[in-house]
Length: 269
Image (cartoon, rainbow, N blue to C red; front, side):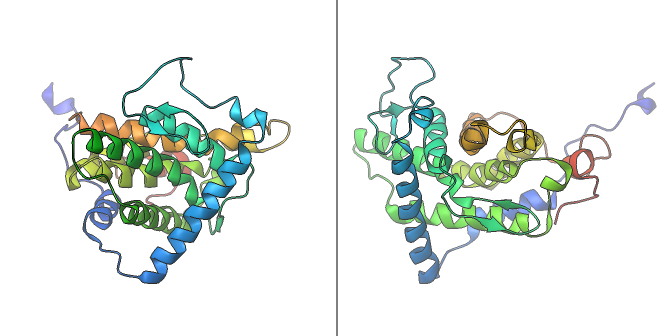
């Protein structure tokens, strides 16, 4: 009978998960031009978010999930009085920076807006810094934020070069979730294995359908979809940091692999 059961041993992780984790954990950003660009992108993105606060259709999505909820050392949402848990703050920040469709754009086989990742990055950075200060420790620096930005941009941008998710009707915010998960797990203190584990969860979520970006369904969801993705990244990173078991194969399986289920290709590039 046992011969009829699939082997369920823990395998070596997918190479793509390893490559992303090694980049996040081990690559030193030495380019001054990259930091200058990231700083300009940060200011531009914050400007997009602050302008969005003038629109009630945007601001009605902001704040805690449960009205009146308070969080000690909560992450702040720029331009508002909200102090929220980092998961909800990531949604709020991601929502405002994307609402007006003005933030940066990257066009390749897949398209997207890599500054969407700032939802997770800013929320987690502020939360970690406020907790650290409350404990008499040093907060994160803006260089830490810019480094996370650069790496998130690179992860999302490179994955978009040759992998077209829109071709099969999936939304590009899948790559926001993946990139945000990778950098935020490291920010939370994760090691290489934990980044790999968190990434496996990010890929296993699959992708949202692009139906909300096309007539007759186009509506406000396309403006908060990135906030939803970057918020989910923080959730997955925090789950992983609690020591939850993950899996190693997102692309090699014949059944259940995202590359086969969603893209009908043998692997991602």
